[in-house]
Length: 448
Image (cartoon, rainbow, N blue to C red; front, side, top):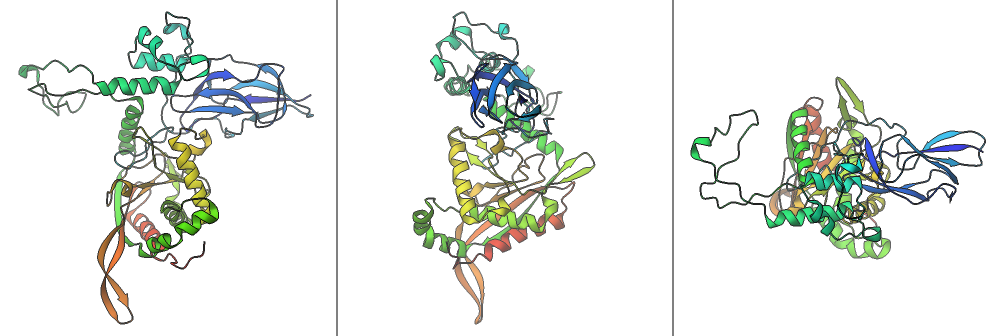
């Protein structure tokens, strides 16, 4: 009887550990392929780990609440095969070595680093933060409580939505957010003699001092802190250059208005502009493969897969970036289904770990917020990110067989920030212009 090793899956490009929340199976239990064996968590992602094969659990190597490195064997599954093997769960990549961290752009429209981030992993020692009651808390929850200065009494008072009333990561983060919204005590006014130069000191710029004291201090939540770190990291890593083009998308607007009812009736999906934008970007990436790269020291890593990340707003106001894998192989119907599915599950917090990894280019829609253009921050380790602005009616010159005319057209700005270490103005400018050309050449008579 062969043995298959179940290994701790990779939950993000920079995540190196995860906490075991619950074993769904015990030693001696029968499992089928893709059946859930255990639940794991990091600071940002909770996930179920499926079995890579059918068999019987012969050994469990770690207990609940243990913090386990990515790639470590966590259980042994006995199968009917003839030879022993090592298999990751379907959520894991074959290379278990952590990749360089991914930073996501932020602001009104920049994707937040919901998963590609250095993770503050819960301490492996459960005795460092021990509640007075018998209530169970995972190391992840204890770590958040310590970081946010939540007392034991406060922790015991938080209602839990997990099994047997257990406080989950979402419960404690929601508590922290509500707690912060009330407002922290205002800092004592600083005496004028203590005010330093805003540019002085090792810590950089100092906050402005309120003489009247009519201010409120709000502590950043955990995601916002990580976003801030990643934005600074991305700016320090890549010399940013941004190019802009204006695009006439009248054909797209008219086509969508004409077919949206029939499209939804035929495919059960609402057609938005996003899949059309993704289609154009994927085609342009195929034309300019050197935009689909990352940088490793003095080496350029050219990605063969075209995986388009799309920034999706969360109910908290932060953004997450689900990834449409091999977007260049999908037709418009397939892209629409992927966009709607990923965006919907992102807002519900139900994305799988592999659905927010391996992006090679990011698209963010600043037009959602009524902005005409933006200068997004590059999603490391990618080298370019494109923002699409709001579509607005504007007078424009239209060339006809009878001469140039002024007409009302649906116009939109595209803006793209790119890493000037490897993407020069010629490549960056040509790429964004090619995306614009594909959008302007959209067939207004296209069949659905």
